[in-house]
Length: 176
Image (cartoon, rainbow, N blue to C red):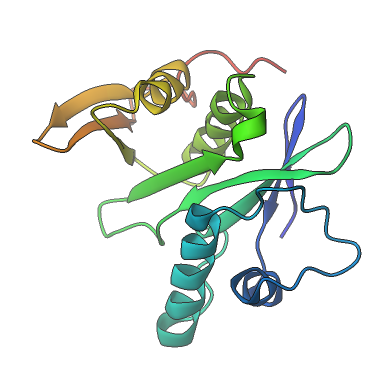
């Protein structure tokens, strides 16, 4: 599967072998893992991906992606789908960046690209959530075109829904 490329980022679909290395914490010499990468969220995502692969086959392209900066190839975080779409065409997403890269718009840029990718593959609804106190993550989803869809005592929910009447768009116009 090909990488997804934005103005500043490469979204690299994680392979089973790459997920195994991440879970084991054993990068190859060619892996560009800076301090803080992979974070707990990326390792958990890789574990979940490996479990899905073992039980129901490889879910790519609806699996995890490594976020890399184009400028230096450094892995700065991860994002992806929590699994393949359900029967109604709905997927759930998650993302995270290493602390040293937060606040630079990378998460919004990566999420916009992932939403465009999902829409182009016939996904009708993308869901995400953020803890009440995670204002930055809430802003990322809003900046990528997701709308508030409710909340409970712990999290705020966001989503984007496409129907036949909507254009092939995921929030704001593609900045490329």
